[in-house]
Image (cartoon, rainbow, N blue to C red; front, side):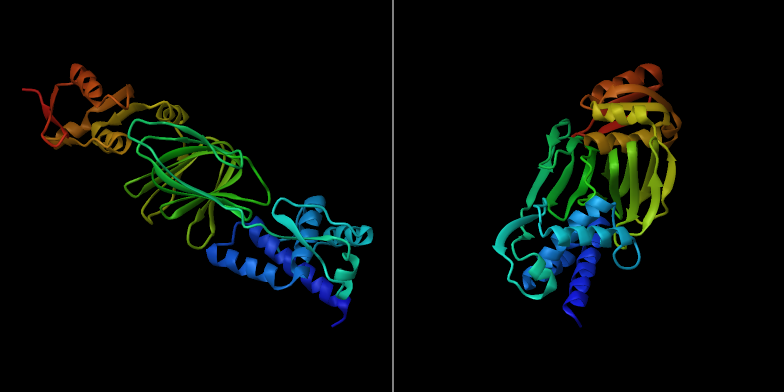
Length: 331
């Protein structure tokens, strides 16, 4: 193999890595393998730098095959000018030894290596807290009550693991650093987006408010559906995915710390209240579940909600020793 052929192999290998990074396909093991590949030879980092800048200049890499023709042309221009420029995911650490064609061209260039900068944090909110958090990449999260999530941001990607609760994300879009939210068996991937994700008792819902987003299978990465603004998907456990129209007013009410019900059966209101507030409601008579509930109520005032309900329907309520509320038919 000639030095030119070897250079092309290096560039195509770097392009394959970049394709996987851009597609969000690198898990923890893939990231370790990528770091090891970078550290194995300074020419690997130089090739990665060239491909990254050429990718940005030429509009990307094909999903199939080697470098695109325009990427190859961009590569030729970069080789001709003999310069490299810094990219956000790499940092200068050493001069490149003059070995091989690519190294000779870049003999006066800086090598850019993975900087390993990682930002991680856990966020836990109380039942009635709705804080707003700005992440290091500029993304804004608005957290719901009783929410627990973990955020990891590094040069390869941005990931949120939502254990429970709800959050809205106004994502700062980056083509080379995807933003993923993991909840239940689903992964929501940002495509320039404002969206919410909730996870309560094994039930996951994603609502797209602006932009575009993909919903994928968390394990395989397979795209299940692409959302348009105003759409939502629901999944319980690993059950079927349900695509429908979102109640945007309800989403906004939740963000404002309110519970909004629109002709919803009380049987469905009960688990919704529990998910939002952590307070359990019991129906002493299952037939009460047919009562239709409408209106906007403060999530931090369940007693006020029940008092309003009792004024409209023949029910009574009381709080038991465990702090739960029991709803009975008025006699």
